[in-house]
Length: 118
Image (cartoon, rainbow, N blue to C red; front, top):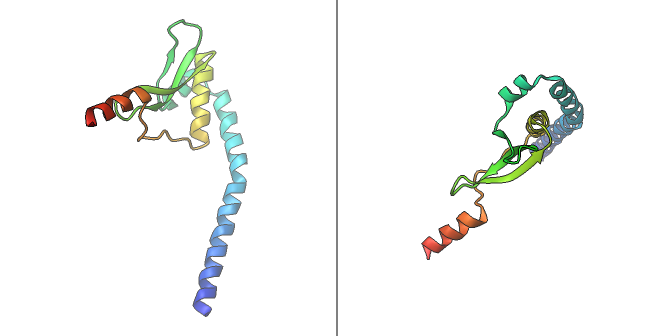
């Protein structure tokens, strides 16, 4: 019985520590975001984890946040007004812990894949 109680106390202590860490996250993210907004574009470019490119119409900047696992197609493309906005968007995604999935296929590639399998 003592072993069960000790195990439960350990789990409770662990949960409390995790809760405290989660409660601090907004402050940590706030400070990180403030740093990003003060960074020069060159520094933001160095931290970008995916490509930022000007739109074909030259009226904005695109950020690709996901790629098709079958054909490498761009997925979840966001268009922002300026390169700086696009780079800050990527920095914010990093700050909140966003990681693009690696096992997602676009509709076109998936349809082609299933057609070849049948």
